[in-house]
Image 1 (spheres, rainbow, N blue to C red):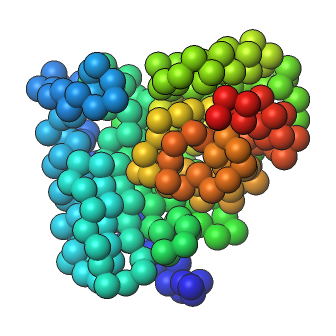
Image 2 (tube, helix red, strand yellow; image 1 turned 45 degrees about the vertical axis):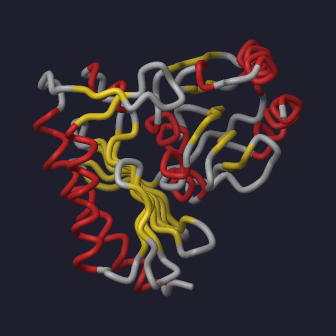
Length: 267
């Protein structure tokens, strides 16, 4: 278990990692860079030099400063360390937004202590926003200073704002049907947000995020940010979400319960 001093030091190091990634990604944003197709779960699964090089920069720093730590990243796979601690990184979560010039992408950095992610960071260098979650505190850091994050008080679906990246992530007819049912009950639906919607949930402007087909590096950084802002993140059946798959994040226990009652019927 990490001590408070270790948490402080490692959170500061996560800032260093995010700064290094930003130095790589920002010059490429809205630059017309070349895009490759990984052909993963979607017909078009883009990756760019910015993705690969930003992750390489992060990995180099981790290897230099914490050589015993493991690393799990989207672009360059997994390296097992001798410590129980490992970093989970997505250099550009929201590559589709990145290549479209839409600033709804972010660099995701999580430190997992071998049991769960305990530090999470979502950095959006273009807008200058850095969302940070750690034990007992979730905050937003901007050029104007620091502010604590707190989820909304929304408890009912008919008053909720729902975020989702792309309904194409729902692979089965049951998943698509239950999402249509859920989204028909909320006050407002927004799409295309990737990691940014989870951050806005922690900030209290979105109340519910429902997704599927996630990887560990898509969600682990967001878990400490949301939980330490007072929110809830689980699988659709209420289980541990850190390995990805079907994920629901909610502002309040009441809203989470209402969403789960529908979502679990699809599984």
